Amino acid sequence: MTEAASKFDPMALALAEAAKAAAVGEVPVGAVLVEGASGKVLASAHNRVEELADPTAHAEMLAIRAAAGRLGLKRLTGADLYVTLEPCPMCATAISFARLRRLYFGAYDPKGGGVDHGPRIFQQPTCHHRPEVIGGLRESEAGLLLRGFFEARRKDRAREMERDSAIHCRDMEAWTWER
Ligand SMILES: [Zn+2]
Figure 1 (cartoon, rainbow, N blue to C red):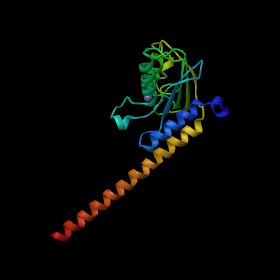
Figure 2: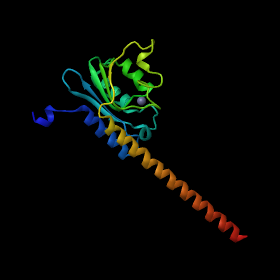
Figure 3: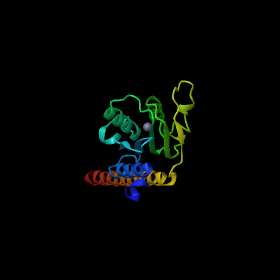
Figure 4: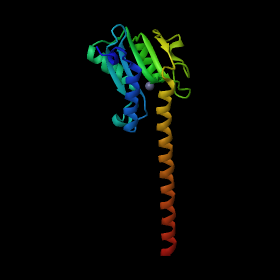
């Protein structure tokens, strides 16, 4: 085994998945499911909400579905999930349903998160399985990807609005001139 392989870092793979999402215009979130004991990758995924027109196609949901489907198991006991952003309430619930052993996440999400923020799913009495949670793993890298993505999107929107208003003004001029 090479040194690189022996030092395999699942969060690096999750960050690479997040970068893939950004490249195709998806919110850059990546997730990797690993068999805790062996470190074997069970599934990796990135957000595909836009591509699949599926509001539930978050990286975590896709990774859990892929691994459970491939293994033919409804519970992934002993598996650890690495995700670049604090999971939302939907994904946190799916993590609990899947009985994952551990959740590692990168950036915190005060607006949309459901683990350390919002409904704090794992702390609810209705939550029957609480994974061990380690937040803030390579947080700055995950955050940088997200910030870069949203900044670019804001700039695109501003440019679009500028273009719209320019078109509108030209139409107005044409209309005035025709009269
Ligand atoms: Zn989610």
